[in-house]
Image (cartoon, rainbow, N blue to C red; front, top):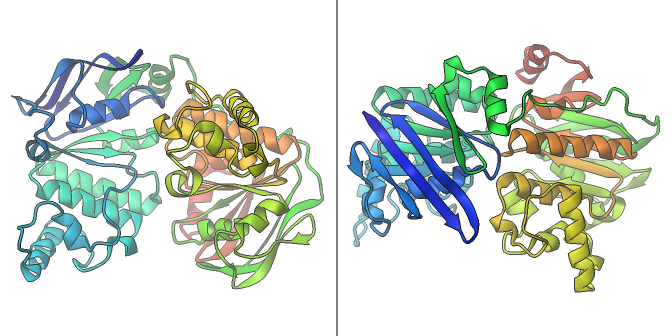
Length: 484
């Protein structure tokens, strides 16, 4: 039996066709991947499958029955649930309150609510306390709480939208183990990810959309990765990343980190020269993200210093870091990188206040950003909330470079983007290094680190290894896991 069968689905936004007569058939009890470039129509399909939007044409059936009316939200919750890349949990409420949000009795009996929550968490093996604030949970714990909430509502079909974007290797494996266990009980998953290797790890079938059209549906074990990429892009070949072997490089340091200590790391020293790209690798608890955020001024340091071209940068002060010549692509584009209600032009020039003096200058800067960073958009006045994830990330990159910084701090710079957008963004990093910038790339993705001249590995807050260009995956992963 098919858990989901969507046929002839078409969705239009004015003149734009977001889905063009597409289909998807998902067998009950399987993990089915949906992949495609940013803007291929994946998010629009999710909005149809979750009842957020009625299609202009076509039909959707769940387990052989027609989908309920879009207005009947309770009926939809019994059919399908979605765990989004951006958490929908209410951070200031407890785990128990989030689990039964909008489903509790008018007169809340708190002791009963906590007992029900504890039973639910135990049933789905989520190791958190019902009274814990969601804001205090890790990303992994929040995702598991949202999956438990979805299952408790009766849904047997769950959409996971970029669920691993902010997880490290061990957390991803734990998530996959939970998916396999739930599949054994009959739960069906639609798995959306730009990390193609994950498709081969956890999914049985894959569907590809390109330019709002259905391209193929095939068993995962019968489709090679180059063929999958070609179906997604319409072009042969795999990911092309500049390795920087021929980049000119100065011996003079631009960025100097001396004995820096802070949240999750201690006594880190490093230098990045003009034209050099240095990577930081490590697990989620290694301190690499906290170190990068301290360099940029998002966090205060406990000891040590950060200097740009010999001038010390005031700790814990983002404006001071900007004035010193440090630009940053932050870890979370939704909360730290963009103002979603503002336009592309306003977001892309946010670090350069002078651009706001004249509206014509603002528009010119926006148009330049669209052209230079290959942002797929209607124009500079388009709200950034209308863009796909990959194009939003390009706007964040444009913002980081708007002031012509000497140093770039890039944290997970290609998170949640497709193959071609990844190539484009890493190409920008290479181009900036060739122009004499110093770059610090912090990432959970090995592909992001291939653009680096060398990679430093942090383990429990300290630098434990350094690898020059040409490192092998196994040796880098071993160092990340503390086995080198």
